[in-house]
Amino acid sequence: MGKPPFPLRAFFASRLEVTYAIVAEHLAGLPAPGLELETHEGHGFITVALTQARALRPAFLPRCLGIAPFFLSYHVLVRHREGGRSIRGLQPLRRLTNHRAALFFGNLWSPTPYQFATMETSQDAITTSFTVRRAGHQEMRAITCTDYAVAVPLPPESPFADWAQARRLVGPQPLRFTPLPRDRGVLRSGQTVDPGEPEPVQLLDLRVRYIESPMWKGTPRLAAAFITENGEVYRSHEGMIAPAGALPG
Image: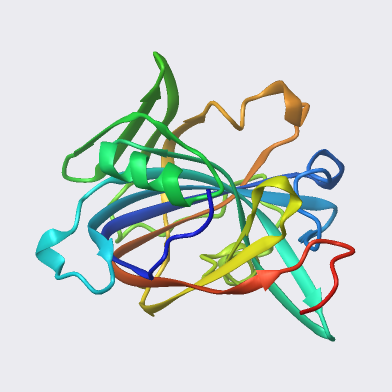
């Protein structure tokens, strides 16, 4: 496993990002060496992202040769400090997809293994529902309100004062920090082009099996939820964070 030998490009119809605040001490062991947990008022953050991709392909190929997978991914919000500079991003924890080609190439090139899941979506006049199942279990179910004329309140247990603060601290992050196996460092990648404009979204129903795990000791609190529609991304690798104790060069 390593990294894709070329940049990737894709459009996406929608990307739902749900962020949970969890007592920081329960997340302390997740950041890879060279990274630190990003916190706010004693909480760290895990983001659950459900992406409906279109025309995913190596950047040099035409759009017509792309594939259209769903992805469900889990990330922890982290920070990297180097030379007086501090940057934030997401470290992948788990990834699932419903597309066999995405599963194969994801496991070939990505240090974070992919798992196969089935994903269903349906829509009516004012709601959209998403259901993800893996190995006979419901992995995630979400129902969002698509009546954008309705003001979206912050989740009642959110640690943020308003949506502006939520977006600034846990809104969509362009950087990824992916740990390489056998402590070979952390791969840093970024995205450009037009990632779309995230908007707050109201969740009418939400169940996430990973978040309901007893390892979080009952502390997860829904902090924020954003949806981005009709975006385009170009993801490329920007460099490496060397493992602790490695010599430069």
